[in-house]
Image (cartoon, rainbow, N blue to C red):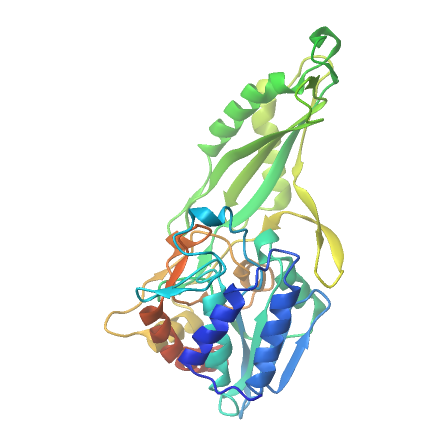
Length: 395
């Protein structure tokens, strides 16, 4: 059945999406709903790739280079439903806001992008690609797969992560590292038989704090940060002295620092305190790795690393985007505080990338997640102009 693109229809679509839980690796039902919407909006081509990304193409009328719009299909867990003011999957509209998990991160903006692009069917200066990706919350594997496959090529990208109507031009990257302390396990009743890796955790944490105080800062992106976010042991039994303790690190890193350099710096910081660890204990540093599996069955082990990127504020694509969305006040040109798929589009593949969407970052990943409908309608209204402006600037 044909669906006419429009703001009311986009919000109805967003409510449908919120009602479908879509954890990373479990986006299948949501992807099917997005595919059906694109077909109902009369996209010229619609397909799902091997990783489960949903891609739609609207053919343009001219020779301008293609521009790609993108949001992600996965959403973080809702947590305890009783802690929400509005049920996380009810998609309630109350006091001028759409509520629920994914309302602003990122199913509301996804619906807006999908419908706003459809308004340009047959009249954009070039092709418009709308690609919604899987596993963004687990390091952006869906976008990495999409670009590495060569299935789509774009001259510019608009990411639909929340900007509150501003133009986002970059973000810090995220590296998840592990400091793995190996020892010898024993029964807790006989600690003399063990080499307890937990004995080194205080020195490790102090080394991490010291290293975090020496990191670079960027005048736009801000300071890089490094913090320990967890200590895990194996085996986990409480009456066993473990043979492995893992200190997990979250490094919000600036562009231009190689993966090897992250490991080298942590290793050097540890060597200042633990150059000669006690007998029976061994310390290694590595990137965290995770075996990712798409709902399509595609699997791959990847390091948990999302690149950062930063566009020049004077880049033609950035200036065109600012001009297109300017209203009573010019939009701020600023970075996101969190990582996005733009790290792959721009940081790895060099495609000019900006972000634009309604929604306030402070509600992301919280049990207060919401999308203000008035600002969402404003964004929907200017999105077609934004697409055309970016497309012309990219040419």
